[in-house]
Structure formats: C-alpha cells, structure tokens
Image (cartoon, rainbow, N blue to C red; front, side, top):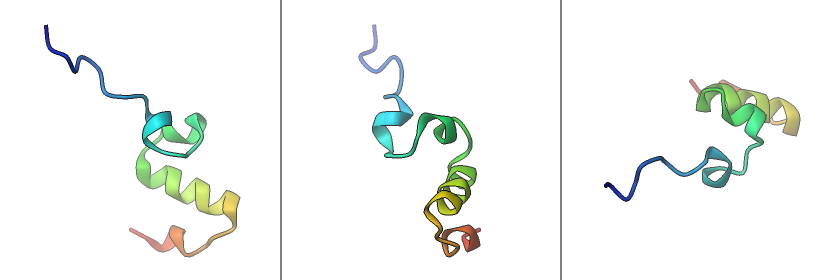
Length: 45
C-alpha cells in the first residue's frame, strides 16, 4: 500500500476558493484577478 494514495486537497494547496480551484490554475488566476481587481494577473499567458 502506497502512503500517498491521493494528493492533498487543492483547498490546502492554495488559498483560492474551492469553486475556482476545481478549474484550471490559469482560469482560477483570471477569476481571482477579477475578484481582487488586479488586471495585471489576467495578462499572464
């Protein structure tokens, strides 16, 4: 039996809300930037 069966929950890995976390990291950054009002994050490709 392997110790690491499942990766740690994304909620613990990142401070982003679970609703945005289940999306791709790139999409979550765009959504987070819109919520925080930082347009600079949306420019990252």
